[in-house]
Amino acid sequence: MSAVEDVVTEAPAVEAVPKRAMTLGTGTSVVVLLLLLVVPVFAKNFVIFQLTQLLYLGLAVLALNILTGGSGQFSLGQSAFYGIGAYITAVMMEQFNVPYFLCLPVAGVLCFGVGFLFGQPALRLSGVYLALATFALATAMPQLLKLNFLEPWTGGVQGLVVTKPDAPFGLKMSQDMWLYYFTLVVVLAIYIFSVNLLRSRSGRAFMAIRDNEIAASAMGVNVALYKTLAFGVSAGITGVAGGLSAIAVQFVAPDSFTITLSIQLFLGMVVGGVGWLPGSIVGAAFIIFVPNIAEGISKGLSGAVFGVLLFLVIYLVPHGARQVAILGQQFAGRLRRN
Amino acid sequence: MELFTNQVLAGIATGAIYACMALAVVMIYQAIDHLNFAQGEMAMFSTFVSWQLMQWGVPYWGAFVITLAFAFVGGIVIERVLFKPLAKAPILTNVAGFIALFSIINSSAGLIWDFTIKQYPTPFGSSPFLGSQLISTHQAGMIGVTVLLLIGLFFFFQYTRIGLAMRAAASLPESARLVGINTSWMIALGWGMASAIGAIAGMLIAPVVFLEPNMMGGVLLYGFAAAVLGGLTSPFGAVVGGFLVGIFENLAGTYIPGVGNELKLPIALALIISVLVVKPAGLFGRHIVKRV
Image 1 (cartoon, rainbow over the protein chains, first blue to last red):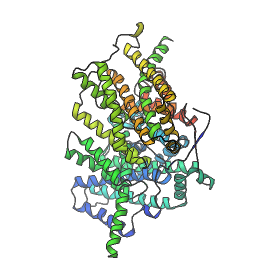
Image 2: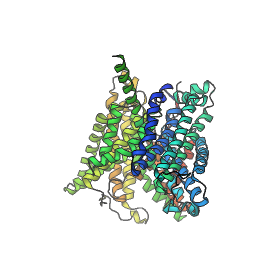
Image 3: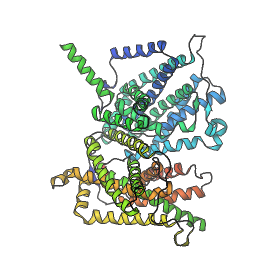
């Protein structure tokens, strides 16, 4: 209220991750990839479906990680982009008979556009204010999807049923398994793209903005452009993840894309380690499986158990899975030396 | 014109609730620089405690005072036990902590008092206020309590030593520590007060929305919106923001075609985003300059 302007030094929202530490080492990557390739062959269809879920939710967490871990911006509106991606895919597949693999890039590009445009007004906001603006977007989305004049395409409150694609080229594979490998290819491609993006000139610009916006702009980084770009890329990837989810779940409805989904993705990012890309999958596993475990421990108190587990994670390993990975590495190093 | 006046009056009445919640949000924001996502659940839990006391035969105002004491101590305990260790952690970790707390309180309340909807008494009665059809005595009482609360807080912060110490600790922690203020306990005190204000909001709202574990979800959202609209650094702004959001929400629902009840919330939030784009610190907030 006073006319005097206070000068404060503020800690950054996100702790910096060294660029090299953003990914797994080559050896570990190969092992993880082999596991991802082999496990489904021996698994039941339901487990394969859960693994697919793990992959596309991991992709959505990865998208948030690029935004927050990369450019230091904070979004609770990811569920909106996820929902738009899912709806674009579902509407194109069901109403216009477009093949599913063509829907995903369209969903990605359109969500990139929406994210980029939303980034424009969001530019002026930061911290809690940005959180609130994105929060508003997330709360508004289910209502917008229910709008009457969109109903001929979206099916209104009822939602849309999506047909599951068969394996192509006469491959002897169940639909679930084919969808798993398809998802794996998409996720891997985007993962490699993200790693390269963060290591590129643009990625360094993101990180400069994250660490100190004013200094970055003094060094000649176009802050406005790169902030909106980060929003766009993150929204685009989230849109693809949403599209994959629509195909895998075979159903879209407005109420699947509420703020709860945004909060889950956010928790996934924190648990996986902000700015550590492989952590996205670990975070996704946390949000898929931990509620089930909590239910197993106590039915009535599952929410409380979930909360306690979450507190344990942030007390014991505040940097999430990344910290566990670093500890593991140090331990392995010590073993080798002895 | 009569429709307009009526809608504004009804908006002021609901706005009073948002204003109370926004006050609680601002109290914690001042103390620790974070939005407390579990604020609504803390208020809900306190309201349940007061209901339980009344079930055991304690009269309304007795239960009111005991609940305030409970909420105050509870807020301090939560800060000491759960959030003090996170004081130096990044913002994101704190938000995760708030979500965890939300989940724990919501689930425990559900287990203790289950999810059925309960009636909650009002001390003001629910007859029409001064012959007006739109605003009941309870709503008038809500507005009155909010205004009293605001005046009380004003005097507390302006004219008491401890209020001054809390302000000092919130604006310049290092300097406050140098002159001998225990900043760590000032933060705990802020939590306690926010929790008590939240409890008042909860007990005022419960007769309107009924008592159940999820009753505060929507209210907290509007409380955030009001606080941000008024400026997170100004308790006065939070109250004005609360009334504005209440009025705007009602008017938009009445006059903008196609909005109705379904799109009220998105419209209210769209208004807030527009205000923030023009005035990023909110209507009454301080503009903060960062040092490189």
